[in-house]
Structure formats: structure tokens, C-alpha cells
Length: 338
Image 1 (spheres, rainbow, N blue to C red):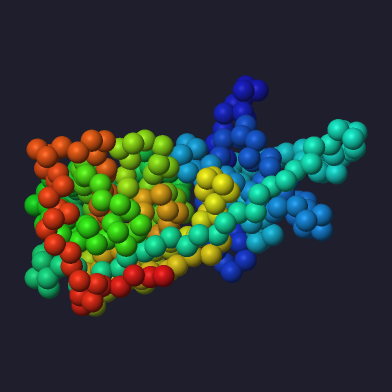
Image 2 (cartoon, rainbow, N blue to C red; image 1 turned 180 degrees about the vertical axis):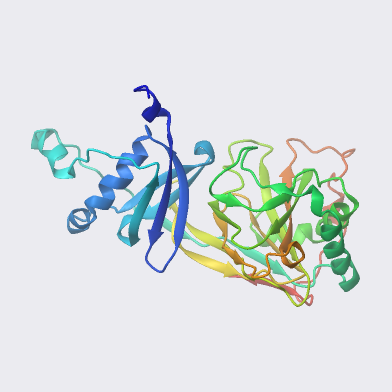
């Protein structure tokens, strides 16, 4: 084996935390965050006594998202393939620099923010919901392993139909969503904006499936996704448990957003739609399906609402949806988690 091989390896980290939680993250062996994680883990007691921050940020999705971990909550770190690091004590690095030259760090205190989440129950009619389930079962052969940016990723394990946007069942849900859009957008703190597109993806999650904490966009592009909407549907009585949606609070470091440890948990209730801003850390918790049968899966249609760069009256969506009337807040089935 050449000497270059270790530097190019991808290390799969399995991080177990207090409470039985587990996170699987890939990280190239030559990334500095790998050393930072193990160094902080080894020296967590000393760092706590010195009042130093105990948060480690690990990149996700090629650096377009991040996972922030509190090292004092970590029970163990498993690496595959195994990796050996020569770890340095923080005090040794500080001693190497004269005291007069040591920089004084003034880390700003982060602001904890709880993102708005909109929950709408009974989103479709009973017959429409039943037909959505029947459609997913009929299309079983079209499902393929879920990917992140077109590539397999250890933080995601479920099945998807990628080219689902132009199907009749996608159009059914999108047209219903357009009616709700003005109310949902404003509840999430967005001013009225013209729509460029609504993107749809159909997923099936079965025994052991999950999707680790991530954001659907980092907001760096003007036509990025703005709002994410997840519609849940499945057979009754349901043959699975778990699969809750965790929507994490964020730590705002003056514009730099990191994931907090606190979160809201929303259950996947049949015929329920959940909406939140796309730049929100969220996670699909592991699903348990004893039968492992496809028909007992938890199905979901995820719709991402894209903002248009410029208003276009001739566009499919235009601005008309903001003049179609607003659904009263007291409408049965509407709730907003605060």
C-alpha cells in the first residue's frame, strides 16, 4: 500500500452520545476536524475546567452543511477503518507561544433560536390520502436507494423516487400546497415572494432507515430552496414505529448557523403535512418495521418551494397564489408549533 493511501481514505465515524443516540458521519482522514474531534474528546475534562467551548463542528454534504457535537455528551467514537492520531494537549500548544503573544479570544455568545414549524393535519381528503398510498405501492419497483448530491452517503438510508415532480400525484399535492402557501410562508416568517418551481421527491422508509441531521440548503444561491414541506402517508393500522422528525434549534454566531442540541419532535401522523424553512437542521429518526414488508413502510412526499430571481407574470406560479385568499388560522387541522 502506498503512503498516499491513508491521506485519501474516508473514515466512517460512529459517534455514540448520552441517552443512546448515535450519529454516523464520513470524514476524509486528512481533514483537520478529525484531529479536532479526537483531541477535544480526550481533553474534554481539561477544557471544561478552563471554561473553553466544548463544541466540535463536523462538515456534512461536502461542506454545505455541518453537524455540531458537544464533546461532553459523547460516550464513544468508533472509526472504520481504524485511525491512529498523535494527539496534542491544548496546554502544550499554548506553552509553545510566549504569554505576551498569546491572542485573547473573545468568542461571541451565540443566540439560541427555535425555528417555526407549521403542522397541518388532514391535508388531503380521505380518498386522496388512500390513493396516495395505493400509488406508492404500485410504484414499488421505481424506488431506489436515497443519495446525497447524487452519491451514496452513510448519513442517509431510505428509498426514493427522484423523478416524481411531474407525476399526477405530485401535482395533486402541489396544487393543494399552493392554496396554503401564503399562510404557511408568513407563519414561517417569509415575505411574499414569486415561485420558480416546486420540487417533489417520494420516499419510503422501512426497518432501520434514517436520515441524519442536515439542512436542505445553505442559502448561498439566490434560487435555492426556501421552504421544505413533508407530507406523511401510510397504511392503517401502521406497521412501523419511530421515524419522528426532529427539527433542531440553531445557535446563531452573528450569521454563522450551527445546530443546537435542543429540538422539537414531530410524529409522522398519516395525512399530515409539516413545513419549515429549508435552512433548518432536521433529522429523520430511525424507523422500526418488524415485518420489513414494503407495504408497511412510512411514505412521505417532500416538496421544496423555490424562489424565483425575478417576478414573471407568465410563469406557472406567478404572483396569483397570493391573491387567491387566505385560509383562516382557525381552520380545522391547522396548528403551529411554537
